Image (cartoon, rainbow, N blue to C red; front, side):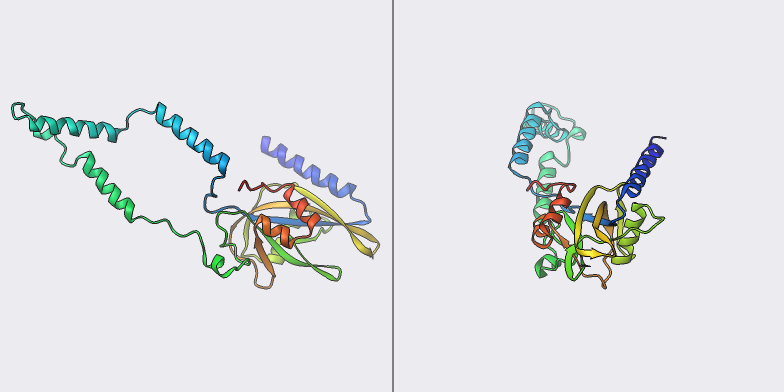
Length: 257
């Protein structure tokens, strides 16, 4: 029941947006597809200090582990074996001591190496691949023709009569990026808004009202027919129009490093 009420409220919001939209403006839906970090990002200074504090508290409040207790027991057994006057039940003596286990583990750890986080796309500087900057958030942008200009912005398209904004978002993404790109939309309601005016009146329209939808990248690739890029937050500032970039970052999670 709770989920149904949420869906009804989101549909109601979309309905109000469309019915109240000025007829002199084009209604446009845009999709922000974000690939979340695949590798844990590095900690900033505050996070490092907090991590060290938690570790200190954990050590001070912790009890001895099974391995430490086993180590102490092995030492006691070794002392008893040295004392010939004391009878020791050899069945209770560990054949593999805690120190043996620790040495073996350290040897195995020394052979282990983390996989490199720098991919082939990073080495080539290929920003058309989502397999890059594994520690960063990446946003999918495409080249769109706006009037006589070519702009680098999110995939977007005009709303059609009879569609919800969510349906328009799904259609636009499939038409422009292909069916191989798999994403998960997080809501039926828009997450952001932006509007711009046309240089001159076009079919009696003043400009476009853009409603942003947010989706997480799951798998797949963008169609080869689409000129696209996967950009970090800093790269978005470089490639996107300034006001447009600011509108996006109002609903995107800010990176802390």
